[in-house]
Image (cartoon, rainbow, N blue to C red):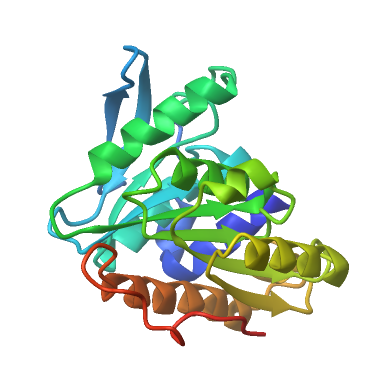
Length: 260
């Protein structure tokens, strides 16, 4: 289901011809970006997919969770990059582009995320981590905590509310949570909001009383308006992040808050 959500929102951004393209090989040049290999400080290598203009003011580290670097993720990354964002996407653990390698340890994962953020950084660019589903949202929090001084925004879509306090305390970025009633009951959402207030972490919440499958184009309950609404909230968040100066001025007090 989580993979379906990412694919569904990607479908709003990707043309039908791209989604219909069956890829026997993920290096197919139907994609406008390319795979690059990064190296952690300890010398471990891993694959990421890069796309979007080098001059972009916003850099997105897209974390698709269990979906990995499949054709839907790559098409989604390309379409987001075409909208003016510099995009880097990577799978869970030490997966390569064929998805064959196993997930690594927590420490190795943090090292990879830190290397990805360093690669994505550029003068004048704000960095946002963007995670889908339970696994992707948790990785988004983890990545933001791996290099908190250089991450300006953290997006959690349909996940992240069960993150451990130790991870949440590391955040220094603004946080956008997109949650659905079916997978995030009100009590769980309220507990997460309370923890974020306790730790003094800025948070925007968009809570939908719908089935997350509404964003899945292959499902019976797909609703393109819902998918567009979710992406629209993300883009608004990116615009807000782009005009914030983390080092030279305080945040406008009323810019971020709780929204339903």
